[in-house]
Every structure is written in structure tokens, then in C-alpha cells.
Image (cartoon, rainbow, N blue to C red):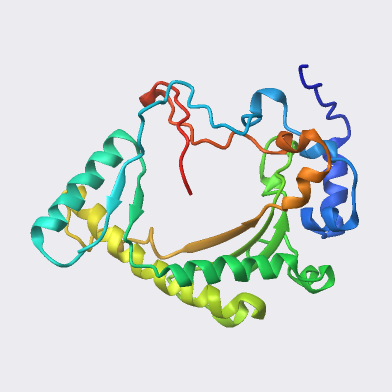
Length: 263
């Protein structure tokens, strides 16, 4: 059966009313709602695959470039291979995956768990952080930046915690105490990784290794930590209608393929 089209009449108004509650998607789930608000439901053409089996849409055998950063500073030959691999990936794909990047697994796992703690704490403890004033250093908000879009609905089924900095000057004391230590450690590792990648990408462009790091482009950082409530599936079979396509769209350069990718 073809899914019914959603009547978005007044849905935008309902979305704004939901945002004013400052409870987020998690708050809806905790409140025991029994149906998905219509402002979350995407039109059929924008939904992900309904089956549990990924569909490649002709992308069999397509593999996203993987750059191995092991031995980053060990020898010149290894570094040249990394630079060449990055040059190829950027020219043919526009992106790549990295492995052996030096960020400890424990740091990543603790970061994920701390963000989960923030989003799953009592609602009243989170509400003080809820704001769409993005000049703030820290924001907690729901449904993406829908006010910045031409068409606010459909909204995104997720809650987000963001923190930002300029000139790499982090005010870690401004972060929520519940996840401050983990975010601080994670960002220290991310900044180190940023330096590695900026060197390699500068060299891939035929420039000096410090070229990108000397510009203003890398001095402002935004960290966005998303939370997608798992309890959504208990509503009804429409839980897959709240997200757009999940596979990464490769566009014309790859014949409009949608290859699956592992996290």
C-alpha cells in the first residue's frame, strides 16, 4: 500500500508550538505520545529504505575511500602514500573515511555515553540549555535548524547539543557539567586530528603543510551531538517516515548511486 500523503496545513504552526515547549523529541517519547506528529513525517519520495536490508541502487562493489593514518610521521614514503590517497579521494569522491587516526576508542565511547547521559537526564535539568540563540557557546535544541530553512516542515526527528568556539579558544567551563570532562578530552583529540588532516590536505593541494592551518578556516569549530530516541519504533509502522534517505548520496559523479556505509 502506498503511504498516504501528509497534509502540512498548519503543521508549521504546530512545529513552532512544539519548539516553545522546549522538551525535544525525547520529551515527546517520555510523555508517552501514541502517534507521530505530522510535522515530523517526510513525503514518500524523501524517506529512507523501508526494508531492513540496505539497497545499493546499482552501487554494488562501490567502496568509499579509506585513508589509513597509521605511521603519520614515521617515514616520508608512508606520508606520500597518504597524501596521494587523499588527493585521489578528494578529486573523485569529495570525501573519505579515516582509520588509525589516533583518537582512542575509549575517548570516543566515553564521549558517546556522556552525550547519551545529557539527553536522557530529567527534562527540567535540560531545559536551561534549550535555546535557538546560536550566538551562544552551547545550545540544546530539537528538530534541526528549521527556522533557518525555507520550508520548516517536515522537521527532523532528533535532539541536538552543540558547542562552538572561535580561534580554537574553548571555554570548557561553559559546557554542561554532565558531559564536560568527556567533551573536553574528545575535542583535544579532534584538534590534534584536525592538524594532521590539514597538513595532509595542504600537501595534497601542492602547498606547504602549514598552509590550511595558517588560514582562518580551521579556527572556528562547531561540535554537534545528535540524539535519535530509539523508542520511536513503538509508535507504529510509520517510524521510518521521520527520516530522510540515510545512505550517502554520491550524486552525478557516481551515477546517482546510494552505497551503504558502515559507521
